[in-house]
Length: 472
Image (tube, rainbow, N blue to C red; front, side, top):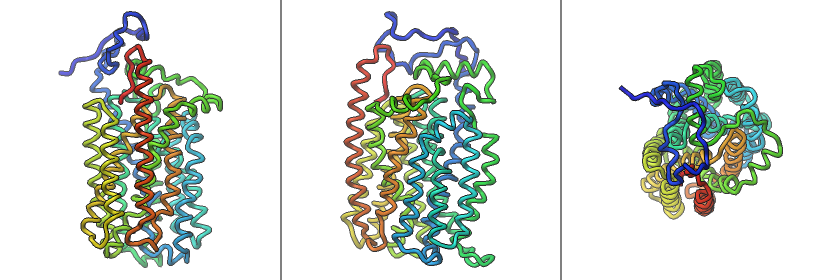
C-alpha cells in the first residue's frame, strides 16, 4: 500500500536562517495535513488533464497542416493557384496566429479553460469544413487567416494549463507526451489522408475537399466532448474536493512559488514579464526548431514524393519519421526527468537534427539515405521542442508570468512558421537547398540562444538562497 502524505497546514517560510540552501526543493515533501495520497492524485491528474488536451492538440495540428496532404490530391490545380499563392495561404495562417496568442492566453484565464478550449475547437473545426468548400485563392486565404485566430490559444494555452498542475520534475514527461501528439498527428494525418484519398469523386467532390470536410466534422463533434472533459485550473477544477484542492495548490507553491491566481494581468505586467532576459532568449531557443518542425509538418509528403513515390505511397512513407520521433522524444523525456537535467538533451537533439538536415542538404540521388536522414532530422527536432518549452515554462512563477511567457515563446517561435511556408518551393525539388540551408542556419542560432539561456539560469540559481533552483 502506498504511503499517504501528511504534513502541516502552514506554508513554508522561504529564505529563513533555518533553511538549508543546498536542499533541492524537489526533495522536500509537501506539508498539508489532508491525508491525500499524492501518487494516486497525480495519476488522476494525468487521466483528467493529459488525454483530452492531447486530443485537442491532435485535432488542431491535423486541421492546421492537412493542407499539405490536400495539395497532393490536386488542391492547387482545382483552385487554379500557383505555388507562390499556395505558400501565401500557408503563411497568412501564422500572421493571425502570432498576433492573437498572448491575448488568447489572457482570455483563457478569464473565461476558464473548459469553455475556452471547446470554443476554439468548435470554431476551427467549422472553418476547416468551410475550407473544403472554397472556390478560389481568396476564399482559401480568408479561411486560413481565420483559422489562425481560432487556433491561437490552443498550443500555448495547453502548456499554460499543464504548468499550473505539475511540479517541475513531473512536467517533462507530460510536456513531451503532449508535444508528441504532433508526431502522432503527422503519422495519423498521413494515414487518414491516404484513406480519404480513395473518395475521389464521391458526391461530386474531389478527394482534397473530403479531407477538409471529414476532418473538420470530426473536430466539431469532439468539441462538445471537450467542453465536459477539459479540466480548469486547480483553484476551480470541479473534480477536486477541497482537501485535494488545498494539496495541489500547496505542493505547487512549495515547488514553484505562489500562483498569484487573483492577480489581474495588466499591460504593465505583460511588459514586465517580456523584459525578463529568460523570456527573450526562450523565443530564440524555440525559433530554429519551430521553423524546421513546420517545414516537416507541411512538406514531408512533398519531400517524400520527390523521391519518386506516388501520392498514396508518399502519404504512407510520411508515417515512419513521425513514429521514430515519438519514440525518441519520449525516451528523452524519461531520461530528462530521471536525471533532473534539460540542457544536455536539448543539445543532443540539436546535434541529431543538424546531422540529419546537413545530410539532406549535401546528399543527392540516394533516396534511401535521404529518407534515413529525414527520419533523423524529424527525431532531433521533435526531441528538442518539448524540452525547450518545459525548460522555459517551468522556470516561470505565477499565472501572469506563465500566461504571458508561454504565449510569447510560442508566438515568437511561430514567426518561423511563416518562413517555413516559403522554404520548400516546387522549383527546388528534389534537393530543396533553401529549406535545408535555412534549417541549418536557424538551428545554429537556437543552439547559441540555448547556451545563453543556460548561462542566465545558472547565474540566477546562484541568487536563490532558499534552494529553489531552476533545472538546468
